Image (cartoon, rainbow, N blue to C red; front, side, top):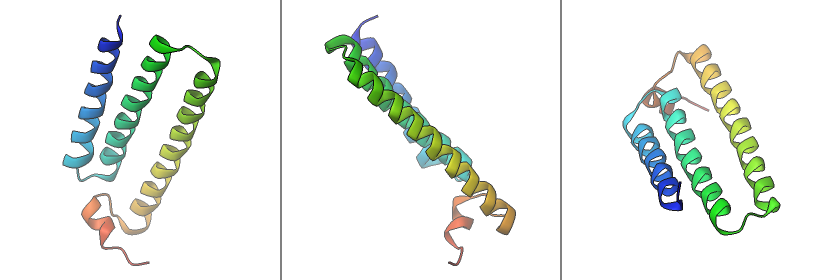
Length: 100
């Protein structure tokens, strides 16, 4: 496997995530699209790390980024669940009309 293959797969992940985030109206599907986009970026960074300069410091950075993404998505799903429970809003249009 070469760097070009890794970057093509990362670009495909990012593209599918971008399409999913822009075309969907359900909050959970938008969040899944954002997660795919972030995974594409992390895969590209890991590919650059693997093929250019394999240092342990970048491995730690990628693990920290993955952990932050996991916490961010868990909090996002919790907010989406709370939004659905309190107001029944599961679409982005409904969520935009909520009062503070």
